[in-house]
Length: 96
Image (cartoon, rainbow, N blue to C red; front, side):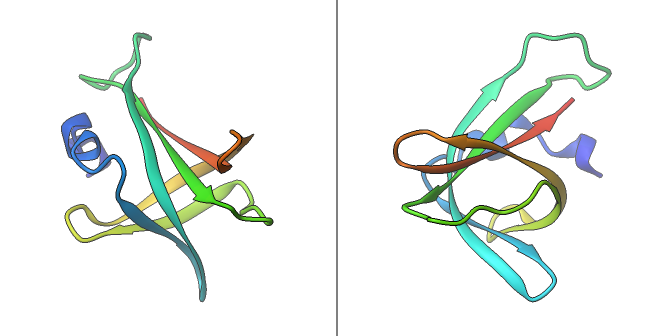
């Protein structure tokens, strides 16, 4: 199912809020960036997204999260913390 989620679907919601949830805990984050990748992949168009937790003093752990958005629905994705960028803690999701 995830191989059917196109880059354009994420590109269209850059700047919008998505929810990362694990069990009863969740974090609302901004989809800060959607970028195509130029690496070999079995996926037609590999890409990555960066989620930003604005002004947060805590960070989520690496692992599987349900990512909620009204347009995308709920996607179970592997999220990796990549550090703060000056605006907040950032997380990466790669589709390859």
